[in-house]
Every structure is written in structure tokens, then in C-alpha cells.
Length: 274
Ligand code: PLP
Figure 1 (cartoon, rainbow, N blue to C red):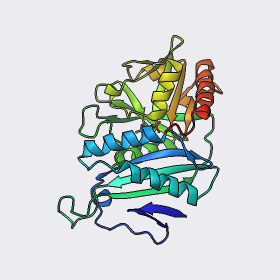
Figure 2: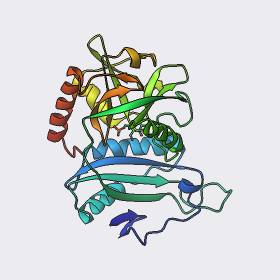
Figure 3: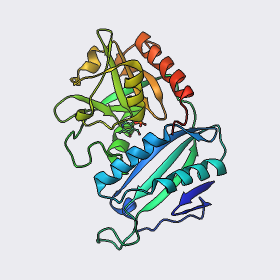
């Protein structure tokens, strides 16, 4: 496996990042996960745009997007596979413990892992912890994902693949690694970015392609919704057939099935839209 680290392609087994890298010691870093099919990344430009916004939000220097593109191309070419997850990690770089970011500059790693197509349906649980819709990190895709790891572990304990958060004012927000859509009275809604959710790329495309409304929703909307689905880079559009103890049918409902179809058609036509 070849990865990109600080300016060149290297063997993953021998590539080394400092133990004093701020991404490791304080979670001072940002990342992107992209879907890659047969060596082509999906929505690379959108991901690079979000990487830059996240980096700015943390006060990191803008990533050199020419290098990031070159790195993605090189890693994809060096590791052929039908379906992969391409991961871009960009951190504050290394400096001695207890000091601010060092002079060495940011660390850039691009790596690829094999992926498999997710099932069309899944189960979710709600968790009692809240997303902060007004925090310093709200909306940034940072490497500080421990909260999501804890919530996801709770989901797995209950036989689910995703956990859903409310925000601090009791509105529906998002999952640990996905955005959420609900059908209420036949209409498709998703929480607005002001809810504190990540500006998911799959979410944005789904809103654009289905006309879903961005609506403030109470967390309890999950109990009334006729249908619920998740969106993310690795799930695409995935129907929720059980949330907590509530069963929502055996398969995708009609609105979800339509969103799945539209997403599959439009994204295939639009693959690698730089
Ligand atoms: N929300 C969070 C917290 C995420 O981590 C992700 C993706 O990893 C998403 C939503 C979905 O975003 P995207 O569609 O860009 O993958």
C-alpha cells in the first residue's frame, strides 16, 4: 500500500509521522473521506473546498490544493481497487509537547483503504449526548472524532450502524458520520446547517437533486417520521428501517427509494466532477 506523506509517495509500512504531531497529541487536524471508484474520486473539488474551510476554522494554513490533488491522483494510481475510501488528513504538524504548533508546518497524509458497498437499509439509535450548534468546531471536519467513536460504540451495542444526535436546543442534528433526512406528511426534510450538523457533501447533493427542505425539526420528529434516511460519502442514501425500538418497515419507503434512485443516477453521471 502506497500513501502520500509530506510531498511524496511512500510505503505505508515505513511512512512515519512524529509522535509529537499535533493531530495526535491534541486532535489539531482536519480530514476528508472521499469515495473512489476504479481510481476516480467522487466530488473531489467539493471535498477540497470543505478541507480548506475546516483548516481555516482551526487556524491552520490553507492546504496547498495542487499538492493535495497530486497526492490523491498518485495514491489512486498506485493502489488500484474497484471501490475505495480515500482519506486526506491535514494536521497542525509537530512541535515539542506543551508548545504551540511548530515551525515544521502542517502534516499532509493521503491514504486509500478498500471499501464495500453499504446495504440499502440500516438501523439507528438515538443518543443522550448533544451536538453543540454554536461551538468553536461546529461545522468543521476535525480529527477530534472521539465523541463520534463513543456514540457509534453505543449504536453497535444495540445492533445499529449509526447514532443520531440532537443539538443543545433539542433539535434533530445528524449522525456520527452522516446527515439525516426525514419524511413528514409526505415531504422530505433535513436539518439546516444552523442545527450544528456537518455540511455533508452527499446531503448537499441530495437537497439539490430531490428538492428536500432544510427545516428546523424537533428531535421527536424521528418518532413521527414516515421515513428516515441517512446520507454520507460511504453510505450514499441509506434507508433507516429501525430507530431505537421503532420499526419503520422492511425496506426503503417510497420517498427514500426515489432519493436513492436519483442519487445513484445523478452521481454516476457526475462522477469525479472536479
Ligand atoms: N456528519 C458527520 C459528522 C460526518 O463525519 C460526515 C461524514 O463523514 C457526514 C455528516 C456526511 O458528510 P459527507 O456526505 O460529506 O460524507
